[in-house]
Length: 251
Length: 87
Ligand SMILES: Cc1cc2nc3c(=O)[nH]c(=O)nc-3n(C[C@H](O)[C@H](O)[C@H](O)COP(=O)(O)OP(=O)(O)OC[C@H]3O[C@@H](n4cnc5c(N)ncnc54)[C@H](O)[C@@H]3O)c2cc1C
Ligand SMILES: [Zn+2]
Image (tube, rainbow over all chains, first blue to last red):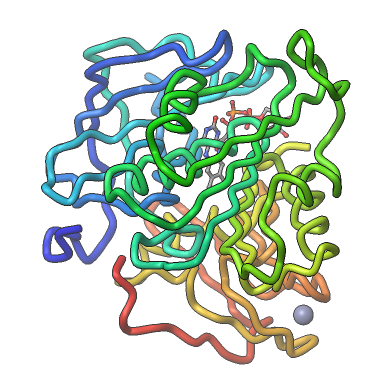
């Protein structure tokens, strides 16, 4: 976080795709090299701008998935979920290739952010691609060897839709105090004791923190998911001031 | 499509030196106070419209042209900004 490097007026930068990683059949991570990147906080996002040959532009926001090491080196990673009827996401999730350039500006957003010095336990609730900024928080905690206990409740349609599955499994094993619970909405893994269902009071109650632990709660995903999960937290007695939400749009 | 004030961060950061999504607005309609990030934002209205999460009145309206940004804050009686934000 080299503050002096942040230009006073936010400008568009040209980022180069240096690598790509397929996360699921519909989500892909773009590893970007951004000259003079000032660093970022976990939870921040960038705006991406695409320009067609005729000058038409489309702009969308994408959360930053990667944590930024305090010793500076590091890259900006975005994880994009393809929406079949989408204008921008199919291009970023399927078409963009290593060596290509895209325009972005950021990092932006200082509210939906977890800071390493926050001592409270953390409850992360993700719906689909809403896991991306929460993953940045998990990665930042891992980098800082944070001691704040973290719990992630991650709602996905099927086991095949889990982003960062291997890394989450490894971190649950290696990062002390990190727990992950999956809510499957369409197909649960074989042998699962619960049938597929949407996130509900029982899931948040059993796998979140009790309100008297005063956890910092971060909820992210499609708009209707965020509203449901935030309502559940409030109903369970969590302080609305400790609930931070970010809506990705859509249904 | 319904979003929230987090989605305004880029456009506001283009105009202001600091991050305005952490600023606290006070709604002129109902007196509710909250972070700009918690506004309910609809797009693509003519520009971005931010409504109070409490009473749904329009608090903020942001319209862009290729070389100008228009920001109307008639729905807010007050905007409180921290001078100590890290980013
Ligand atoms: C702050 C912020 C951070 C975001 N971070 C990410 C991220 O890390 N990864 C990511 O994949 N997306 C993220 N999004 C969503 C992203 O900005 C785009 O909205 C998404 O990629 C769809 O764009 P599109 O052009 O493909 O679809 P569009 O052409 O804009 O929309 C196509 C259709 O899909 C619907 N739709 C749009 N967005 C969603 C959604 N999120 N869920 C369900 N339906 C939707 C629309 O209503 C429309 O019917 C973020 C959004 C915000 C506001
Ligand atoms: Zn109001």
